[in-house]
Every structure is written in C-alpha cells, then in structure tokens.
Image 1 (tube, rainbow, N blue to C red):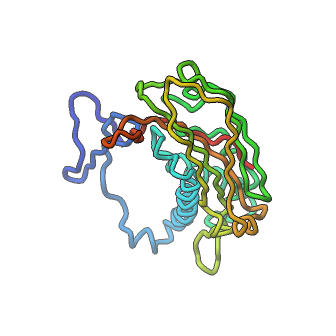
Image 2 (cartoon, one colour):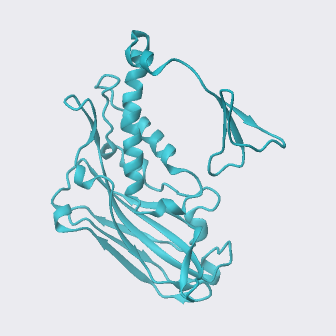
Image 3 (spheres, rainbow, N blue to C red):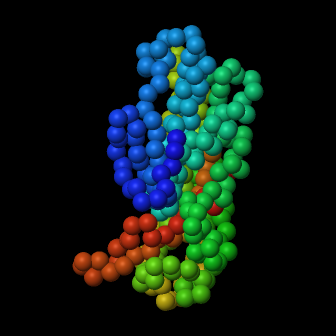
Length: 269
C-alpha cells in the first residue's frame, strides 16, 4: 500500500492499481491488485493457515458490525470509520482464547467488558470535550435498564458548539452484544444469544437552544420483558450517549446537521 502526496487527487483504478480514500483522512491510498486466485486460496495446503485466519476474521467482522448496531445509530455522529476499529478489537479478544485451535477461537467480550467502556466515536472532538458536564450512568442488568444523570447545563459554557448551531439534543442508547462461538455444525461463527446481539433501545431528548440553560435531568432507557428474560453471562450490556446539533429546517422546526455531534460508550456491564 502506498499513500499519494502532492497535487494528485484521484480515485478509481488504472492497470491493476487502485486509488481510494477513507473517511477521516484526506489522503489518497494506492493499492496494487493481484495475488493468488480464489480457488488456490480455497484449496491449496499452502494457504491452510490463511484460511483459518480468514474464518476467524469473518467472526470478528460480524462482531464489529453487530456491536455498531448496539450503538443505536450513534455511529452516524462518528468522525472516523468505527467498524474496522471494532473488528480489530474483536480480533484482539479472540487471541485471548488460548484453549481453542486457530480458526475456531471464540470471541468472549463478556470476559473483558472493559475493552468497550469509554470507547469514543470521535477523535477530533471527543464527547467529554464537547459536553463539559459530569454525566454519570448506572446499569441494571437483570431489568435491562440504564439511568443516566445529566447535571445542569449552561449551554453557553458547558457545550463546545463548534459549528455555532442554534440547537442541540441528547441521545442515550442501551445496547446489548453477545459473545461469539465457532460452530462445528455451521462451520461459522454464531452469537451466543441471537436475539440480544446488536439490539438497542434509544432515548432522544427534545431540541434545546444552544444559548439556554437546562436543569438537571435523569434519563432512563429500558428494554422489554421478553429481552430481559434472555440475559445470560454471555451478554454484555452497554450504554452509549451522544450530543447532536441541529439547525432550522425547511418547515421552521429544528433538524439535525449531518456529522454535527459526537458520542461515546459511557458504561459497560
């Protein structure tokens, strides 16, 4: 892989060389095409190790995708691509399985839940640098309930309104992610509890003015009794929070501005 510098700004491919960009970077990346054929990789004994790694990476990719769903849409506030980072986190968790053989190692987030706590969706302006009040959070695993306490907000002082937009709102998400196990029967990775993997419940506040004052708030989010009955030790419960900014829409009502905001994982249980 090479990175193009200077005046060349292009994407696409030319004679076996691809040029592309990634979100969060203004650089153009160059990559050559080619390598072994798909059939050779799938059948040759020389690529047995690669096939095992590919199988595990497939499980990590599923973990990354479903974990993003557990953020309840807050990934849209991110200023970089969260999925590759989550995929990499999944791979690191999988390496901690020292019992199973390579190609069949399990991904047990439940044993290392702290890996997700404090995970920021933004690099340029992290959540705590934008919402400058001490938010606290409590999780009740049995009842799948989260309570977030937001102190009094004087928006002019406590919020970094980078784009100087007139409105903001708060979003709290209660999400669940499960461990992933390799299934000999299906020859693939499957979640420990399908109906609680990548599930979320979202609370969205009303729009507030960015020059106003909001008194202390207690925000509660809870999942259904049916979902509560599915909770096991292999289920990880996480609470994410975001602040989203808005402007005056066509009808005169506030509407969100794309990418204007930030978020993070507050707590994991």
